[in-house]
Structures are given as structure tokens and as C-alpha cells.
Amino acid sequence: MTVPELATAPDPVRAAPSMHGRINPVARLIAAIVIAGGLVWSIDVVSAGVALALEMLLTLALGVTPRAFWHRTAVIWVAAPLSGLTLLLYGQSSGRVHLHWLFVEISDGSIVLAVAVCLRVLAIALPAAVLFIGVDPTDLADGLIQLIHLPERFVIGALAALRLAGLFRADYRALELARRARGVADRSRVRRFLGLAFALLVLSIRRGTALATAMEARGFGGSTPRSRARLSRWGAREWATIAVSAGVVVVAVAAGVVTGQWVLLGS
Image 1: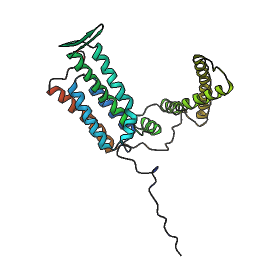
Image 2 (image 1 turned 180 degrees about the horizontal axis):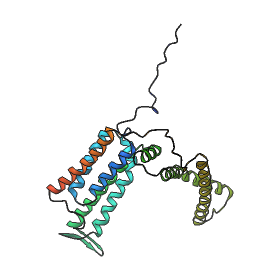
Image 3 (image 1 turned 90 degrees about the vertical axis):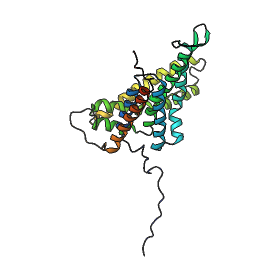
Image 4 (image 1 turned 90 degrees about the horizontal axis):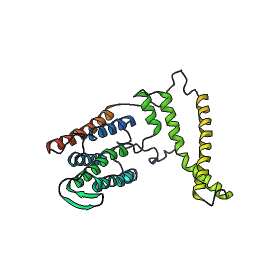
């Protein structure tokens, strides 16, 4: 009598990652730096618009879900127009003036500058946000140590601090509920905030001391080379990611130069 084989459904937790998820976090970091470093030298509408259009097409090609995209980039879509609004109202005036009131002066030059800055912020910030969707901090730390060869003590310490940063909100909420239950500093918001801030400071110091002791007991920071639980791999996919990011910058800059809109900052 044979045991029938069980029909197994794909586990959503262990499902194969998308193309975006298979890229090494270090390659994503380098790609974001390449895009930001190439687009920061000029403020013009053409190069920023071309770069933004190419980045949106690449986002679709990488398989990033709309929900994850809008969740991670919502703040950028709000901050970019606000930065443009500031230059629209108070930027350098040139050309025809459309509105003048006290310190506010809207002209053709300020409008173009506001649009260019808004597109520039989107073109620089969106790739950084999209590329880091789903990045595991531990994988990034492994890559920085194994591939970039950053100091292990610095990277592991930063990783531990990042892991603990997520506990601040939970600690704040728990302390707030506990103090409310005891009726402590419930009459003034300022007094309550100061009391909670001091309690969080004490809690953070205690937790940091305990974490440092635990890490020292496990041999972190020692002179003996450490073993690797997971290898950080680098291959053709990572090189292609960096090459594509550099291609976006080259095409955007070339479009700005050809149209005569590319102006180096400070010139």
C-alpha cells in the first residue's frame, strides 16, 4: 500500500521573489546613487522629465505592485510639489510677471524653475524608494560587509540599531497607555510628552546596554574572522541593474543637451 502524494499549493510566503526582489540590495543602493549623482547637476525640465518617464517604465518592468509603489512613494508625491511651490512663489523672477504681491512674485522663469525642481525631486527620490521596496536589512548588511568590505563592527551595529528603531513606536504606545492608566501627567500634553521622552530615553539606554552585552557574549567585535550564515551573491543581474541606471542618466542628460536645456548648476 502506497501513501498517496499530497497536493501541495504554492506557499505565498515562500513564493519565488519577483525580478525586483532577486536583485542584490547593494546593487540597488549603487543604482540609486548613480541616478541621483547623474541628475543632481542640472535643473531643467527636459532631462528630469525624460528620466522620470524612463524610471516609471522600468518600475512596471520590475514587477512592483501598484499598492507597494504608492505606499512607499506617497510622501515623495506630496513633498515634490511643495518644493516646487516654494520656488514658484519665491524663486528668481524672469520673463513675464503674472502675479506680484509683497514677497510673492510669479513669473515665467519661476514657473519653469518650479516645474523643473518638482520633476527633479521625483526623478531622484522615486528610484531610491522603489529600489528599496522589500529590502531585508540583514541582506543589505551582509552585502555591505562581503561585497563592499565595510567594517563589520560598524555595519552590524547599524543593523542592530535599525532593528531596534522599530520598537520605539510600540514602546511609546505602551508607556502612554500605562501612564494614562495610572493618571500620571494626564493634564498637560507638554508635560506628558516630556515624561514619555525621558522614559523612552531610559528604556533605550537599558535596552542598548543589554544588546551590547549580548552581542559581546556572542563574539561580535572580536578579532577572529566571523563565519557567514548567508552569502551575498553578485552576478549579471546586478551588473545589468547598474548599467540600466547609468543608461537612464545618459539618455536624460543627452536629451537635455540636445534640446539646449541642460545647464550645469553654478554656471
